[in-house]
Amino acid sequence: MTEKLELQPNEPLSVKVERHRAVYLTAVNGEGGADMDQEARARMEIIRHAPSDQDERDKKLLYVAGYLIASKGSLNPEEIELLLSGSISLPGH
Image 1 (tube, rainbow, N blue to C red):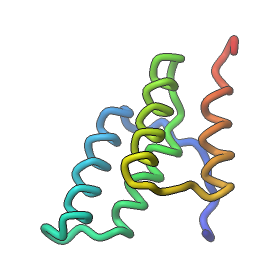
Image 2 (image 1 turned 90 degrees about the vertical axis):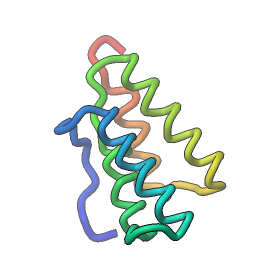
Image 3 (image 1 turned 45 degrees about the vertical axis):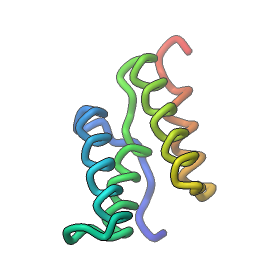
Image 4 (image 1 turned 120 degrees about the vertical axis):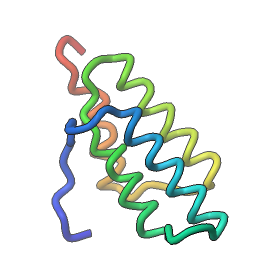
């Protein structure tokens, strides 16, 4: 991966999750024009998402865990580091 991974809070998590679900289902089912590269970009938007509070942090982690179980996928070390850094960097935690 050549781009720098960093947290991005620019859109609500719910928007990113819905986008990823749609692209993932389309790519897996071979419908429309979505492919696994688009799925990976949509997934990275979720991994890069900077949670605004503990509830959103938990939702993000739960979604990623569910995705990994359902897809039988895995994350690379940089993705794991980014995911964990966003999960413990909330003020007061």
